[in-house]
Image (cartoon, rainbow, N blue to C red; front, side, top):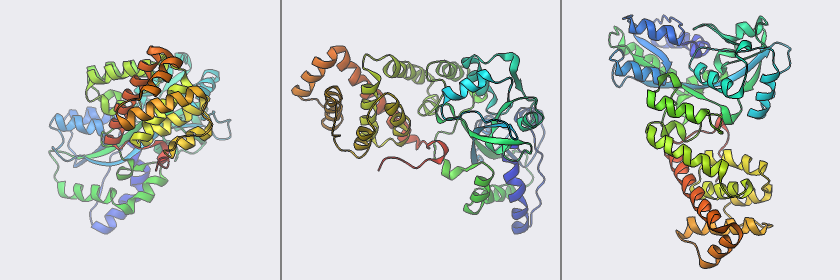
Length: 404
C-alpha cells in the first residue's frame, strides 16, 4: 500500500524488479489519510510506503515491524498552473505571496504538505474563499487543468505527470518543505522477505535516475539525518512550537528547526533567541549578516552560508566582501563599521577571545549593547551551524555546496 507521491517512479521501476526477481507486486495507491485509517482499522499488507513520520507512528503503534523503516526518496512542494497560463514569480517568497494575493483561486492537496501550506496561506492573508483543498488521494493537477484553480501546490512528483498543466517550479527555498517517503514492513506480512528485496531494489544506485526523472530525490542523496517532521506527525508540544515558528517573521520552519523540534522546549527557546538576533538586534542588518557569514565560514556550515549569503547581499553587503569571507580571507574594501565587525567576530571564533583594540573599536562604534548583540549572534549561529552540520542538512534543490 503506497501513497501517491512515489507512484510514477514505482510504475516504471516495479516491472524491472519483477523481471529481475521473479516476484509479482500488487500495489494499492491510497491517499495518506485513508491509508492511516485503513491500516489502523486492521488491514494487512506486506509493505507500506508513506511519509517517514507516518511510518514511525505505525511502528510505535505496533502495526509495522520495529526496525523495518527504509527511507526511499524525498520530495519538495511544487507549483503549477493551467497549460499556457502565466506562471507565478518563484524568485522569492515575497514575489509568490504577491501573485497569490492577486490570483483568483489557489489549490493545494491534503497530503503531507497540506497542513504546512494551509498555515502559510493563513499567515500571508490569502482569503479562505479562494482556496480549495483537494480530498484525500485527489491530485491538485486535475483541478488546475480543469480551470477550477489558477495556481496549485503539491509534491513535485505528483504534479509532473498531470496533463493540461505547466509545472512552474519548486517553492522558493526560504519557504520550502521537504518530505521523506519511507517503507515499513507490516507485522502481519506474509512476504516480508520479498518486501525487503523490493525496498533494496528501490534504494539501489540503478533506481536513482528514474527517481530523479519523476521529481524525487533519492534517499541516500537527500542527506539529512533527522528526517523531516510533517505537522500531522508531531506531538502537541512540537506542533505548538512549529506553529509559533511558522507564524513568526521567518515565515516557515526550515534549516535547524526540524532537528531542534526533537527537543521542543529547546527549539522554542532557541527560535525566540534567534528571532531577536536576526530581526530585532541593535546591529544593522548588513553588519548582522556579516557576523553570521563569518560564523558560517568558521564552521563550514553549507546550509547557513547558502541561506545567509543571499540575505547579506540583499542587506547591502558587497559581493566582493561575501566572496572573500567565503574563501576565509580578510576582505579588502571594508567600511570602518564592517572592519570592526570582521575583526571582533573573527578573533572571537579564532582566538576564543577578543583583543583590547578590537573590543574598544567595537564599543566605540556600536556601544556595549551592540557588542553583546555581536557576541549573541556569533554564539547563536554557532549552535545553528552545529545542528546543521550534525544533521548533514541538504541544500535546497540539490544546490552545490558553496564553501570549500
